[in-house]
Every structure is written in C-alpha cells, then in structure tokens.
Image: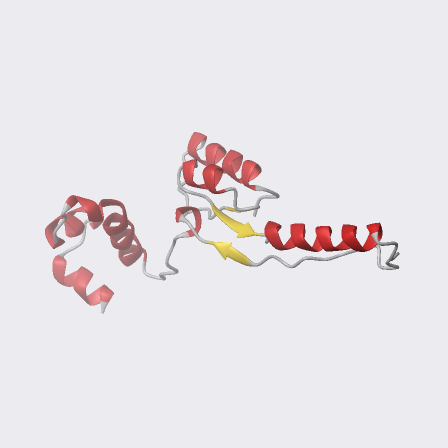
Length: 136
C-alpha cells in the first residue's frame, strides 16, 4: 500500500523495471483516487477514496462557525476513507492451484482475442482433461 497515488504509480514502474508481475506477484494500492493518474498507470492503479468532497464540506462548515465567532474546542478532526476503488493493480483471484491460476491469468490477459480452450491448454502446458479436473 502506497502513501498516495503518485507513490503507487512509482511502485508500479519499479515492478515493471524488475519484471515483477502486478497483480500476480505484487498487488499495489494507492491513496487519494486521482482518477487520471490511476487510469493512466499500467496496470490501472487501485486506490483508497478519502472522500475529499465530504472533507471540504466539513472544513467549510467549521470555517463558517469560526467566522460567526463560535470557537470549537475540538482541534483534531478525523475523516474515514469512503471506499477502495479497485482496478487491475489488485485484480487477482486467490487460487491455490498454480495451473488453474496460470489458466485464469491467460484467460484474463487474452479474453478480448477470441481465445478457445486449446489455446488455454497450450499456454498452461497441461492436458485438457487435467485442466478440467483441476478447475472442477
């Protein structure tokens, strides 16, 4: 987990430089959900959405109270993150069987190419019946 989306993108670049497969070997999550930065990352970066809009409204309300002369004794405000926006940098299935995991990764990476079962079997280097048994 990176401190922010910019650092998360740097982690993705380091993984690419050292041939570390994301998300197969390392899953990467940033913070801030900077849409442009996350979507332009390769692979697209998952990120924690902090709810900046809600934080802004709360800050504006506090400022309004201060302008009206209300002095709040509370000096520290905590805003919980709203959600995790998942993208490909964390898109992995937890599969115990390495051959099934390899087949699923091949299918994920080549699904738009009109692949068929024989291509999956060849990519995994296992018999069709063996792969069917492992999937079952």
